[in-house]
Amino acid sequence: MTLFDYGVSHGDTFLTHLQTKPIVDYADDVTVVDHGSSSSPTPISASIPAQNSPTPISTPLPTDAANETSMTKVDAALNSTKPASKPSDSALEVLCDSCDNTLNTKCNHCGCHCCGLKVDEKRTVACYKCERLFHMRCLPEPLAGIPKSDWCCTLCKGDPNVVFSSENIQNLAGTQQSKMPSAKQTEERGDMTRVKTKSCTIVPKDHIGSIPGVHVGQSWKFRIHVSESGIHRPPVAGISGSAKKPAVSIVLAGGYPEDIDRGEEFVYTGSGGYDFVGTSQQRKAQSFDQELTRQNRGLALACAAPLDETVGGTANDWKQSSPIRVCRSYKAAKKHPEYAPAEGVRYDGLYRIVRYWKEKGVSGFYVWRYLFRRDDPEPAPWTDEGKAFIEKMGFTMYDPDVDIDGRTGMTKAGSAVAGTKRAGNVNGSNCQSVVAKKYKFQPTAALRELVRLDTDNTRMWADIHEKEYATESAYIEATKGHLSCPICQELVQQPVTLPCSHNVCCSCLCSSMNAYGNICPMCCHDFSSMGSKSDVKGKVNQNLVTIMRALIPSYGSEWITEPNATTAQFARREGQPVN
Image 1 (tube, one colour):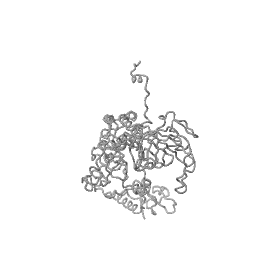
Image 2 (image 1 turned 180 degrees about the vertical axis):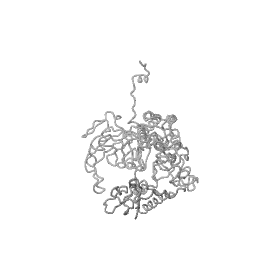
Image 3 (image 1 turned 90 degrees about the horizontal axis):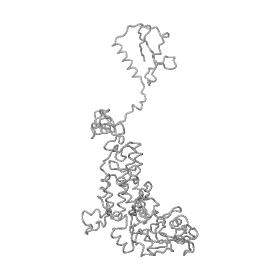
């Protein structure tokens, strides 16, 4: 290849002939040539030294046309020999699957999502969530300038008029979990095939006392659903407790021959003493002494008596013992049918331990015995008052395989009854009597007044109260579903109600404000009107806290500080003069 270059020497312009080899690299926009014996490429400007260059040929200065023609030939020669270099990252272009980046074709993927045009890039914004492009003039609310912070389109913000409920977003239908073998198991093996689908989060695991929303007389067909309700957490074990804390619940199932049940009082036998190795007949017989450890020790800690691992103890005042939730299983009906249910597991109320002691059982080995005495304001379910209470409340046994949901009293979707409700009869009979709700839970007048005062959550309470609930626990579950924090996904604590009517934990909201500013973590709406983070901390919705305390007495026990009553307050309560 032959190239020429213009040079200037002693005020004369000359044309120099250059012998070159293929060009090596053009990355730095410097023309590199090889001069025969030269071992390294050198720039053109350095390839013609003033003293060693050949004798210049004096030529007249070419005209502009000639100069342009010569430079065009040089450029063409350079372009024809320039190797294909690897494009830089900035030059990479992503092709659109819809229009192949055709400039004149409207596309909602690589152009404006509203009009589809690919013009006016300086007046185009991108959503930081979905990465769609929008012309500022095409938006429902046109923007005057480029937003200084992250901008979110209306498609990702969501509708602020829709009340948030965790029940609406946690639908496992059609997911991989619904295709697991455990989800397809049938009733061939009875209760053993049941899997736990939820946990009680209203109260902690070691909660002492009654469970909010669960009343005496409610029953469940399977033990696993008793665990879900929070009444008795272990799905198999008969005692819920540990060696360090008092036991909180037990299930009477008639597993020990020493058990005695008189309804209002019963003698319960501790756990242990059985060797689960060998044949089924060998496993039924006690083979060693019980010890006051683990759950047995937890029952002893619940008694208001000094702990004695040798002979036991008796409470000076049995009403000072820790309350224990007691359930009776249908298995106990073999020995005590007058007090046990005929089917399923029934909650019978709170009992307290009067005394505990150690004695030899019928098998000749030592067992630990516990005397329980009932102490619950609600009537016992085997009495006439208890049966009337169950009838009044409309309690039915919860069975997941029937058409009527025992927890909510509503007809299940997809059931035979639900599918024929519009027709008005099932097998020729009127189905309205089958589907008709026997009982509808009604909030008390005090609770309705508290709800009326919570004006910040008017839409949420309207959404909750437009449905019917058969039990108080179903009502509490629905309320808890609407009050799930969108950040931590737990029951909202120290709730702050935003202008968009979403409730967020105060601590979670402060963390979100540090990262994303005054933007609702649920719908991305701006709440700058609430002020700074220090201002938000003082805007906890006390009306909502009072409602939750009325529904769940243990709510906020970790962060609510009860003020101590002063001497003046005591005097006013007693009607005495205040100094």
